[in-house]
Image (cartoon, rainbow, N blue to C red; front, side, top):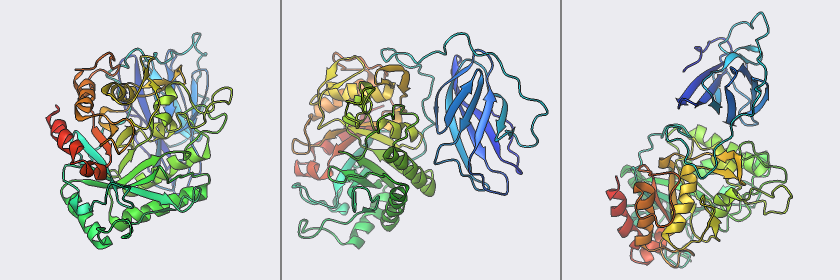
Length: 493
């Protein structure tokens, strides 16, 4: 259902139901500045009929009084120059649609304000419905994010990290020698000049460490050759040693500028976020993943949004968080209600949530991990198919954050989800042989060989694929990962 047509003369807010499953729907407002001067903030106000309520929302701040809802801009999307747009979305429960919409006090369709105050209705006599507990699968007709973009990636992708700036004991692999089986090559790593500078630098491995390193011209030419084959080459930021804390807006802006310079220098396809260690944590009192307030979180979201906007729809965005920063959020989020928990617990969740329509692939590192509780409320330990199944199912089904069934992290699209595994015993703790990896994928995709765990997400034929650390270690061990899993991925439906 679309709202009124935009006016060319004044700011407008256009509503559309992006999906509708009968008992509820997903809605989106797009605010467009059709005027001649910049606006620095916006507020969209509307009524909903009795029996219809708003649940989860994103990219705005919400207040309500009875059936009247007010959405105001976040810090990063309030200023709109003439011709610019911003959007926010929310989930509605019930069959009604917004009524009496105003934008900054004017009709959302443009023109003059209504002659009388818009009607209001009494507040509901019963509490609005809460999201179902994690033991029940979410409705299959409810798409949690926007439709998948045309990225040029195969349905099932093989993703690997290339040690481009160091050897790490595995030996250096020249870009031209990376086999064509790898669909996404993440260059490891871009690192900051200091933890809080936001100034990211990337350089090829020095010849003293990597005697066979190619020249920068050869490296760039090899990237072009990969891209001509349809492959994607990204700069990966962070890693184990690259702590990145965007504590200030100056650091945020330096991040955007320096990452752009790297992308432009080598003509890369996008960005991989591999923040580990203490890069992300939540300040005390920052308890809602949908509306984060911690500067390092807010500034990272803003920076990535700016990069996405700069490079357009074809920009590839991947992320490789550890389980501590994602799935642990099922039990613990930030420092918790008493302030005694690790503030890093679940701290990737607000970033993933805010960027869920921009993420191409989320491939959590299912390695170097302690036991993590799955949706069956049992602890799962790395080293076998079970861990990959349980951890990945959480992203495909969604889960309550810190056990709060009224605060559910929504499922990602199947095509946005892969999982990461070490390519060899030397690459990381939690190595699983090819048979175990493929058992996990067959469970997630076909519902077969799931063992004792029953995926809440059902079958996922559009599951994106596999990530590994690393291409270099895979070559060192005779290409076991590539040779086993490329044909396997090709055989999936």
